[in-house]
Image 1 (cartoon, rainbow, N blue to C red):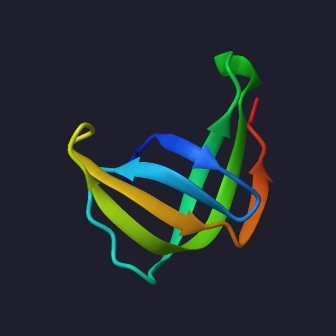
Image 2 (cartoon, helix red, strand yellow):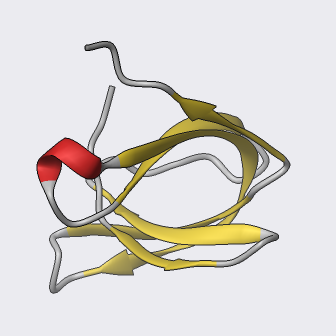
Image 3 (cartoon, rainbow, N blue to C red):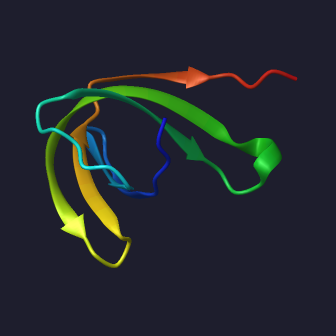
Length: 78
C-alpha cells in the first residue's frame, strides 16, 4: 500500500501524488479521506484506472491522474 496526497477530485476522476511510478492503463483501488476533525472523517474506497502521470519534482514523486469508475463509503468501526 502507498500513501499520497489528493490534489484535485471530480465526479469523473482524481489527481493525486504518489511515490511510485504507476503504469498507464492499470486498474487501481484507492481510498480518499474527506473531513477535517479526525473523529469525523469520511472514507471513500474508489476503483479506477491510471490515465496519465508526470514527474513531480517538488513532491519527489509523481502526479497521477486516474478515473473514478466506482466508489463506496467505508464505515468506521466504533
